[in-house]
Each structure stands twice: as C-alpha cells, then as structure tokens.
Amino acid sequence: MGSWGFLSNHGRVLLLLAHDPGMRLRDIASSLGITERSAFGIIADLTAAGYLSKRKDGRRNHYQIQVHQPLPEPTSRERTVGEVLALLAGPGTGLDPG
Image (cartoon, rainbow, N blue to C red; front, side, top):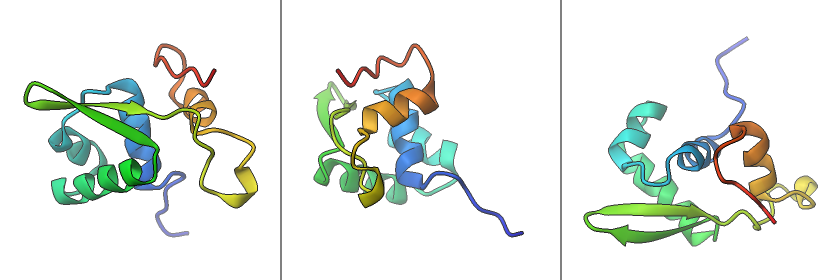
C-alpha cells in the first residue's frame, strides 16, 4: 500500500492552529513538510471558505477557527469543524463549538 494521510493538509493546518492560533506560516509549512507558499494558499482557502478568521497582532497574524462551520463533506454536514477538531486535537485547545 502506498503512502497516504488520514487528513488533508487543510485539516492538518486547522489542527495546528487549534493548538497555536498564532503560529507563523513558516512554522506551519515546516510542520507539514510543505512550502510557505502552499501554507499561505491553504490559509487563504480556509479564510475564503469561512473556516478561519485572522487578525493582525503586531507583525504577526492570529487565527481564529470558526468552530460553528459545518464540515465541507456532504455526508458529514451534521458535524461542525469545532466538534471534529476537538476530538482530534484533544483537551486544552479551547475549541468549544457551543
């Protein structure tokens, strides 16, 4: 069997940001083994789709996951992003969909 991952890079970025909302693009890219340009594209995708909001904090960005958003998969619409990330990320991440 070939190499594969359980989560897409988009999902993995959300997990990283659940643990550290102030994570830099450079660190996201390094953690996932992708380029900074790819990390920037993923952040842009997630922001445009409404899964992330970002605000400037000095020279850095601070990201907030929009936990109320439904999952993008049509078969999983009854679950929110926050519910799934809370399951995967574990306690202490502050992901409260309520």
